[in-house]
Length: 373
Image (tube, rainbow, N blue to C red; front, side):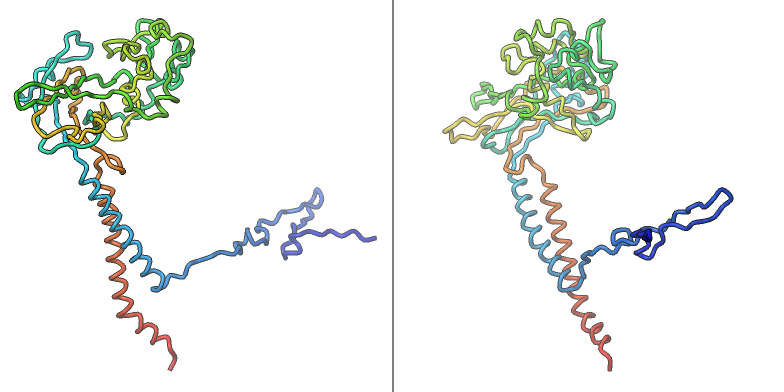
């Protein structure tokens, strides 16, 4: 009975190897050619579109006809969103906050207050969102973004007493662990803003500002938790100390509301979600429209912004501002998205017309040249 040396590579036309007789005996040299298979020889079935005038031109026109109306709708919606912004940094000597901006420093024991009057030329309907804005503040710096301990913020007891080394140099203070640790928490925005409406008779009416519901649900209920084991936050944080630039410990951020105190304080949670650009805004308060009330949430007229100036920005040439804004189904005021859709749709529609003219002018000439006489 004869033995057969069958090999798939030989069947495909490629020998399995070449045998060379050397001094020490026969040596098999492997063939470096790829296998004769459909995959390695790139013979797999594929689909390649044939671009013709009948397929390309309709595609350009369809994209243009779809994108332009969407862009117009987005732009008009953004245009209808009302927004008012006022700078209260106090750079100019005529500014009511000039003295506060010049004299205030971190950990100042004497609060500095100022009042900034302004006028709303149009009423604000529905819920109004109040933001604070900062400029020239680089929250996107790599070391700044990493300077936090997510396990500590999630209520882990071991991380509470022994924070991550990423928090350096804001990890410990006076041989006690800092809670919350890190540069992000240490630079928490702590200006206090109050809004008042000036009645025609000159009296001031306080605008109620809602401080809850400003943070993301997942942040509030998943990422941030107070240390477990004790409902008394003073006892839970007793082995820790406050951040260097804070005026009070974390368990005194909102002592009147246990659901908004400690690590789950919504002002703190909003600040800990770092911004991508050096000029940004963060939600501060919500002015809710009263149910069954046909009057505007903020009627046009005179207002006063009362500021407790706690956050110095002159050291890094920053600016501070307060923004009032309504929202729509697409969020806040952002005309860029509508402009982008209109631009892309217009360019596609214009290219479709240009290509249609070229095809109409030169297409028949090319076809007639291919016909033999």
